[in-house]
Each structure stands twice: as structure tokens, then as C-alpha cells.
Image (cartoon, rainbow, N blue to C red):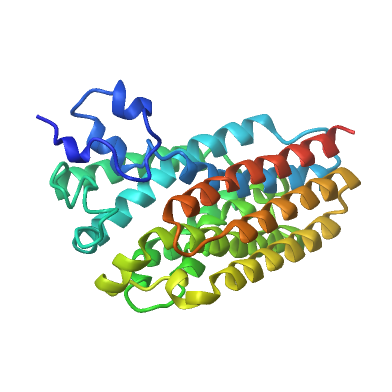
Length: 309
């Protein structure tokens, strides 16, 4: 019989289909992949879509390649799930010491270590099959992310800003979309990549505010703890850097005015997050964190319109 306490984790989407309709035996594995928390794969997907749209604008195409967008969607869901599974395997002893994570499938005993490893392999295989649909340069670029992905779960043990390493991993799609179109890289996608890294550090600092007290007890390091009482300033600086680097990427790719208007709206949204940030409000931090999906989609939509006109 399923454990009631583990039926839904604190930051999961309430009433998600994975908790309501999926077979009971499959539910712990879906939670291991964070299927009931879709914000993660959205945030992994958005840099891929931005990069695809930026490449379309630079190449004079009327819209981003639809097939590439679909492949990136499938790949983002699979690889985000694989990354979370790997992270939980590495962190299983730490997770049991943090209130928000102790009911995850591994520390709570819903999934065995052997089962988690097999599930990790299945998700990685799906990601590989998606990657192999691209050109050789994009495939090689994709494999280049594996080192930083493997490193991330260990960083919180000794590095005060593990979010930087998360950003390096989560932003890799900002290189992939361009590589898939041009079979090469240039300054524009590199600038977009580092803009996305700064964005990830900002929004994941907000996310880490939910765990700041437990992290202090468990000795887990995070940018939220590092910034402390100056967390608003820290997040604000990350977001300023995001906009500056993204504007430079747009100029390098010679995008149109609509993309810059979208970037302006994106910047306003990030600024709004900073003004609403309250270090003591974990629930509010989760809402602000999730709002980054909408901000990113607005920017992507503006880039599509720019390509169309």
C-alpha cells in the first residue's frame, strides 16, 4: 500500500495526473523524474527554444525549426528526469535530513537503489535517441554537457554557489539550438548561454529560500545561504547580468525590434520578482520561481513574432 505522506511532495503541482491517474506502482518513478513538477523541464527547455529562435533570426528563417522544437521538448523532459534521478541517487543520504526532500522516493524507501539506476538508464537512452537526430556537431556539443551534469550534485557539499554549476548544466540548450541549425557555434549563442547561466543562478537562489533553515542544519551550501540578508541584491545582480548578456546576444545575431521588446518585458518580469522577494516566505519564493516559465515563454513568443515579420 502506498504511503500517504509520500503521495505528494510539498513543491509538487496539486492534483497532477501523475499522482491521480498513473498506476500506483509507477508513481514513485514518476516522482523520481519530477513529472509532477513540470517547471523543471520547462526551465531546461526554454534556453533550447531561445537558441533555436535566435538561430532562425540570424539565418533569416520565418520561424524556428518545428522538428527541432519538438525534439528539444522530448529531450528536456527525459534529461531533466534523468538528472533528477541521478541527483537523488547521489543525495539520498542528504535528502532524508531536509524536510522538503525526505519523502522523495529514494530516502523514503519507495524506490530501491537498483530500481533508480535502471530508471536512470532508461531516461538517458531516450535522451540519447533524441540527441542522435541532430547533426554531428550538435551531437558532440550535447555530449559536452555530461561532465558538468555529473559534477553538480556534489557541489552543494563544499561550494557556496552550487547554483553556478547548475546554471552551466541547465543552460546547455542555449548552445544546442544554434548548433543544430548552423552546425557550429559563434559568439551569439555563447552570450545567450552565459545569460541563461545568470538567469538560472537568480531563479534557483529564489527556489533555495524554501530550504534555507534545513540546509543550515544539514550543512548544505547554497547561494541563498551565501547571499543571506542581501538575497534581493544577489538575485537582482544575476538578473541584470542576464539582461545585459542577452541584449548583447541579440545584437550579435542582428535580431529585430520585436525581440528587444520581448526582452524588455522579460526584464520587467525579472525586476518584479526581485521586488516581491521575501527571504522568510518559502511559499512565495516557490511562486516566484515558477513564474520564470511564463517570463521565458513571453521572450520566446516575441522571438517567433520577430522571425515571422
